[in-house]
Image (cartoon, rainbow, N blue to C red; front, side):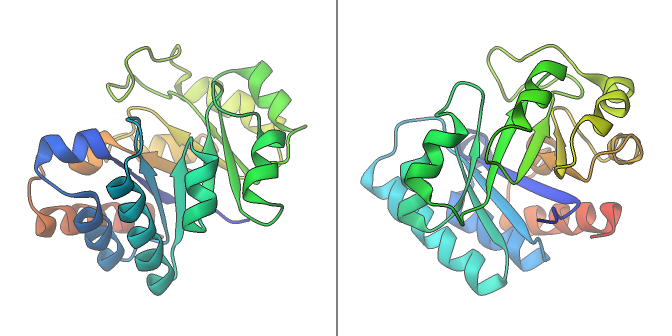
Length: 211
């Protein structure tokens, strides 16, 4: 698969802090022109949360964008979405039994050992990070940094999304170090409180990364 260079991640807790609903936020970034979108929901899923995921899936399909569900293979299967797994989630081989052989699956890695191990898993792309400091995790892994990203990049032939503390100020450095894509959580919502502001921020990111 080919990863778009800008990979927005909509974290539901961060959206709530900004006063934005996940579906409204998804529609805003899709209107900006994004071609991939991840829903990151760390709380337990309620029936309403599942309904929201399914609505976002339809919006992504209508926009020609890939919809990715974070962590939850069952929700990805129900929504007909791609899946992104962390190191503490279902192993990719087990998740394949849930989502099937055709759904795109991504896998987070944080160091050389995990990146090498990912090559043996049935995944379509890998994420590596945190590249810089991040506030989106309670207990983040050690920083990777762009020098280590450049060293590790040749270890996998899979598309690689860099994540963790990536901003408009440092994204070019990350892409130059070998990342195919930059996954963005915090900087997507920095100083954003309306749908129009989020749409404008997504367009800024698209222009910056030349999607």
